[in-house]
Image 1 (tube, rainbow, N blue to C red):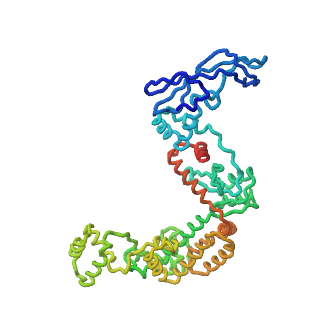
Image 2: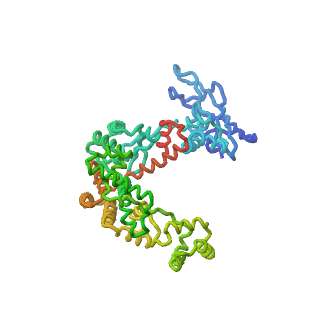
Image 3: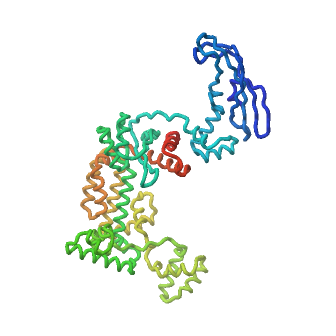
Length: 500
C-alpha cells in the first residue's frame, strides 16, 4: 500500500476518517553534501514536511516526514543543509512524485477544469491553475528530425487562425506544432531541422513553396485521400450535370415551375452570350451572381440543368407492388380504398404519406428515384463491395448516355492508380490524356488542378507514403479543442498535442 515510501521509516499510521495520516522519518545514515559531496551524519536539527501521497480507498493520504538538517564537515562549504530523498520528496513540492505523475496523466487527457473534477472524485484536491501547472511542467521531448515528414494544418479559429502539425509519417510520432500555416513558418522550421528526405502533404500551395525553398532535393508526396476526395467532388458535378440523361432510365424528371424557370434563364443567358455580351455584364443585366451565369453558360442544353427527383425510402415501399397492381387494374380506385387495403397488410403509416407517395408518381416508376450524390457514391464504391441490386442499378444508370459510360471507366481507372506501384506515373499520364479527350468539363477542371503539382501526384501513386497519420492527429486535436471549449491558448494546446 505504501511501497512508494520505502526509503522512509514509517512510525505511525492514523485513520482520521476522510484522511489517513502517516508519520515517518528518514534513515539514520550519512548523507552527501550537495555542495562538496562529503558525507556526514552530524545532525544540526530537525523539521517536518507534510506531503500528499496517492489516495487509499478514496481517502486522502497525508505523509508527515521528519527531515534532518545536517552539518557539512568541509571547511568553507555551506554550514548546514537539508537532506533530500529523490523519488520520494522533491524540493519545494507538497506532493509525492508518484501522486504528481498520476495527476499529470489525468490532466494530459482532461486538462484543467475537467481534470480537477475527475481528480476530486478520486480524493485528490487541487485547483485548476495547479492542474495546468502540472501539465505544463514536464519538458517537451526534443524533436527528432524524421526521414519522412507529414505536414497538415488545423483550424484554431475557422477562417481566421490556423496552425501546422508535423509528425513522423513512418512511426506517427508527433514532432512539433507551428503557429500559422504560411510558407515562411514551415520554411523556417525545415531550415532549422535539416535531414528530411520525403514530405507528405495535401494540395496546399504554401506548403509546397516552403518545401521547394527549404529542401529543394526533398521528394514531395501528395496525399492520396485528398486526391480521391477532390476527384469525387468532380465526379459528383458530372453526375449532377448529366442527371437528365441517366434519370431517363429511372423515374421521369419533374416538369414544374422550377424546371420552366431554369429553361427560361438558360435561354436568357445564351441569347446574351450569342450577342457578344460578357459573363459579368450578363450577371448585371439578369441580376444573378457571376457563378450562376458561368454554370448556365457551360451547359450546352437546358435539360442538363434538370435534376432527378430526390426521395428518401419510406414505409410505403414494401407495398409498392400491391399499389401498382391495383392502380393498373382500376386507375380510378380511390386512395382511401388503397389505404384500407394496405392497412390490412400491415401498413402503419398515415394517409397523407400514402397520398404524397402516389401523387409524386412513385408507384408507377420502374424503380425508386436515386439522388445524384447516391449515384456518385455507387460509382466511387469498390465493385466487389456493391450488392447485386446496386450493381444492376449502377449499370442501368451509367449506360443511359455515352458521357456516363466514359465517366464510369475513368473512375475505375483513377481508383486503380491509387494503389501505389512502379509504372503508375506513366499510367497516370495516359489516364489524363484519355480523360481530356472525353466530354467531361468538370473532370477537366480536376485535371487542371493536378498539372501544377504533377511531380507530387506522381510520387503519391508510386511511393507508399501518405498523410493518414497526420489526419489522425488532427482528429484527436479537434477532440482536445472541444474539451477545452476554446479557452486555452496555443501553448497549452501544443503541449497536449505533443504529450498525447
